[in-house]
Length: 230
Image (cartoon, rainbow, N blue to C red; front, side):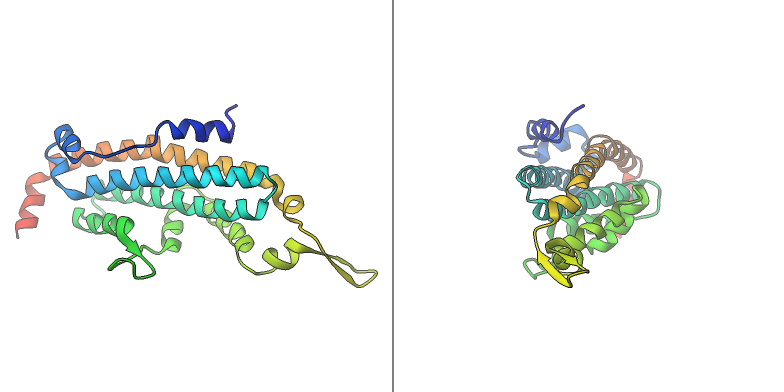
């Protein structure tokens, strides 16, 4: 069975180095005269770069026994996965007639350029909204994200449970790093699940949705042009 390290090594050989607008246009001139497909390609590839980077650091920390740090990074990996699921769902919604191309175009702009700190002029898509959509496709992601968030935050798990034990008979609190003992066993299977879902969304779902999206753009080009010119 492929290890997480082997999976990451395989990903490293597939990281996209560039996206050519001319190449996409040559592939399908009608579909790729619109900006949304190009942005979708850019989001997909940037997310793989991010997931690969997070994955390498998550595994490194876990192997060194730094479980708390690994859990915080895995939380970020779940959010990265959720964005890819959200993107795929929105492409599907366009083809199904539930979302207009122009609304989808705006969503892709938000996913690429949105920020929460004012670094750009566009507001980021709320990550909780994205997670809620991802939960519909893969139940359990939200619960996993919530558990990992407790590790990231200075709440009970993140402070008292993570760094102390209580001797009720002696009425003593002893301080110790409990992260490997209390959370180490679930780190590898949770990481493997997140990476497996991401790979399926990247290699299968996105490719299928983009193929359908391109076909839909070809079939609806006249109506879309009329709407744009109105």
